[in-house]
Image (tube, rainbow, N blue to C red; front, side, top):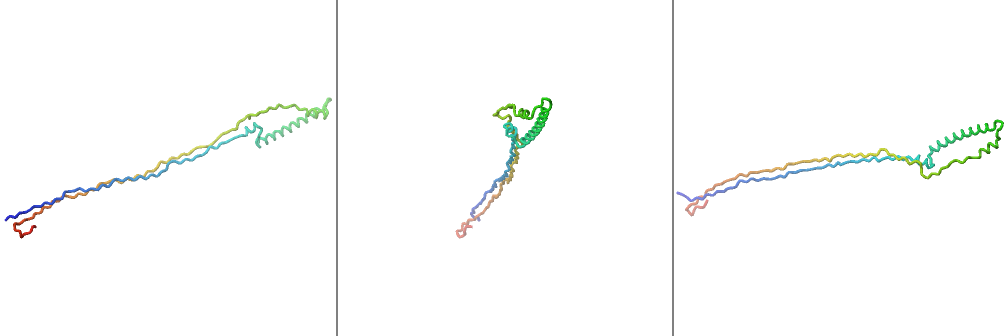
Length: 173
């Protein structure tokens, strides 16, 4: 006896599922740059000669000149006393009054009037430099590579056979 049958095929296609994880890069920068240290110039100004040419003298110069004038005054006084003693001696000796009168007759000294100083101030300098230190920046680079994950779902085939009978009393299976 033959029965009508129906053949049923259930098929699931194969699939490839994938997940992409992107690459990640992290960059951290530690900045250093440069440092600069300035050592300024030290100017030295010597006005002693300049002021001396104008007649304004330092205490050191005044002391030295006063000491020199004192020595010269003592020397002149001793010389003058020796001359006066020699002038009073001899047959044609001068009197003290004549000697004193001759001393009061003075010769004029030559004088010059100047308006421009003879010397300039002496300007010099020392030291003065610049320290520059450069340090490059530090980079910290971390790299996390990307990845692709695959999941393979295989195909499947299901066969089922259903039998049909001529008898209406039989149910379909």
